[in-house]
Image 1 (spheres, one colour):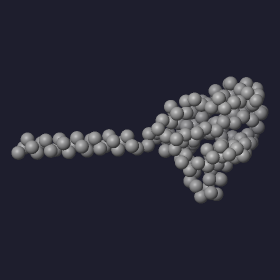
Image 2: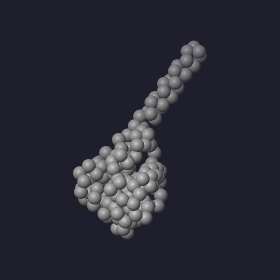
Image 3: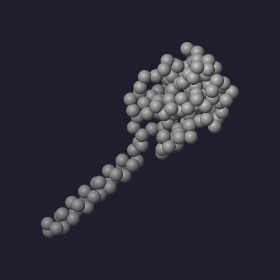
Image 4: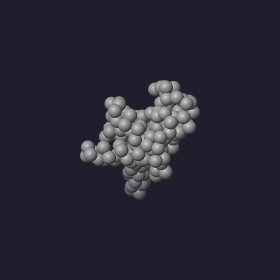
Length: 167
């Protein structure tokens, strides 16, 4: 009798443990990190996006510190590659790591270049993205619940990277 009861308890505990492992695997794969400080230009982009999402009745995406780090890495890399001219910016400069940075979720990236390093560069870049249907779709996509935005001024051009992902 005792042996049978022990087997049942072990079986129930094994089933509970298996269910917990499966449930954990089905949950969100990427926990957001607290956001770090942003450049004024990056903050302009985030604020403008949130303002228009709010007008549309949509929630604001959470600024994820991990995504900020990745977006900054991408902006720094692109700023080094384009040199002193925005004409050197091509779509091939998008982050090839996007899928590995955000595995198992939907993600997108916006990339822009502005000559010089204007103090209102964030507003300029937001306007560029807003007037591009594919970039606007990334900013306003309700499936994207997390974002990271970063800029880099290399002395000649300002590069902005906006990354978006689902939860």
